[in-house]
Length: 388
Image (cartoon, rainbow, N blue to C red; front, top):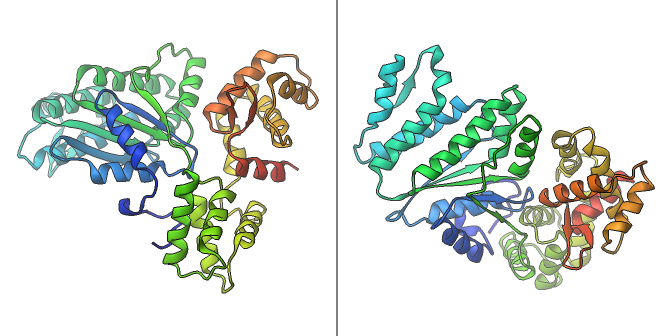
């Protein structure tokens, strides 16, 4: 194995996810999934592996990254193209979609939709009829793996189409209810709850994912993190004092997050020295203070400005600041007292609300004894350094 930070990882090289994937398949036998994870945790690798290894005699998987989607019509057109591609392999036609095209004056040439300018308003009908044609002509369970669904919804909302974003969520839920052989997997590094919460501020009353199970992609176990690091060290022929000890130190230093393991080994590859536990930690420390931010750690600060309101933002920053400088988990009263030393507030309910959001966004974890801390020590260290 070669280090490939940020690049495509071959499904055969995905380490430590077999039990998680087996569990996800069991869930998909019954219902759709919201798969959430902190960025760089390897959720796309998990999806890629599932798509590559799906039993095609029983399942029909389709994967798309939705980050660049700006309108629901673009989304509906993409779904049509995917479904058309699959059905054409078995020479099956899309009768309902063709009827729609006749009604609105559109055509299909070589598998490409040619639609009049007014067609964008018909996105829901196009999406619905596409799914109906698929259900009618497919005897397998169809699973749409859609990466970065929250970003697509956020893009739609930012265009001033809050109502349309709500309508799309409701349409997808309705399709799941109508077609028992249809499954959807939503993924995103920022949870879909952020977008839904923002929409509820604009009057949205539904819970559009309450029929889906929400699952988390955790970091690798210490054993699997060490295994990944060891395979990369050997694959890159890196000289080490103790390959197992160095691999263990790499995994521990980055909390078992696969992307950062890849990065550390990649940097070792470019150095002609004998690597050790100490040099592994040295690389991590250097990257956390890198002014060029090759690990893109500033994302953890910037996304708070994007997804939290003006009222919520000071609470989020204050709570994270308070937790960042604590070496021990804190009970709520301690966290709130430290927050009050940073800002004037007596609004404990807002503080509890923001702590809940910070948990859903993978910053914070609440332990079984009720105490709070950063979920990942690596992010805590960066936050402490970045915020001074």
